Image (tube, helix red, strand yellow):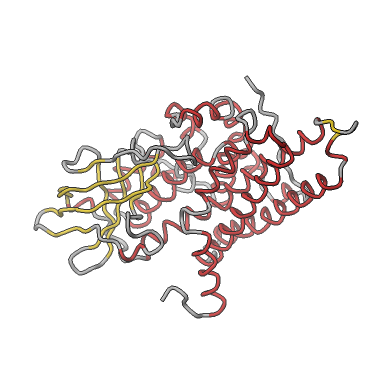
Length: 392
């Protein structure tokens, strides 16, 4: 079994800006990834299987709802802690981080923020332990970047609602126990609905033949006259701003996670360049390889600081949606560029499963698109700085 030798780069001593608690949380997550993810992830990706045996471990390291208050089963941690856990998980694999991101930001977050006390007490403690797993239904076959155009709908039948429609590209859907689904009511207002597995007319077909996120379970959500109890409607926020608030939390986690993938590829390429001998010396001694490595560590360092600052703003409840968009877009592009440069340093070995680089590269092709595409995030920044809306 190949040993995980990862050493995290910290070129500007950013650790001095973290608390002792942050470092302990990071160490616990990093060691868990080295022990539980690194030995199995290549095989899981080759087989396109989600390693469901890791779910209890994810719960144990606090990866499910770490910022949810302790009274509801969460760890009561700050937003930087959440980001650090996502960084370490994506260092292992983007698909594993996706599983935790969905559970935390797209299922637990809306129930905590938009749900009532009965819903919080019913679902959050079990979601925190992984006893219940969830998914998030917003994207539709014909409505991705324009979620407001959704056609999934609910109709008030007096003592219950009837839900019809379909969602796709849904992480965790094949095994999820509940789904937080967004649908339009008769007035065209978007509402959040908690759909439970076993409800008649609710199915979750799995998506196959993916070249990306192969160790993550992806599927659809199909609703055929599903009867929804009225107590399953999220009462405290509606409109498009409700799901977009969830996406802000998820995008924030992705911004941290992408750094983890980039760090893993940089560390792999740096170590390989010192060991690989060509023309009588390590390839690390050649100028072009040093250029690649120097640019990698520079971009990682820049991303680390913008993301830490975003975490500080989020802790103060000052982070804007546009700032989160910028950070997500920058960091994922940075990570994807680093995977490509790292692959070149490894030459032909870079495409094999003996190293993590090609797997990270394929995963990041999904990450750069989901939770808002690369181009959409660019236009969000454009709108923020110009005041001109390019979406209309």
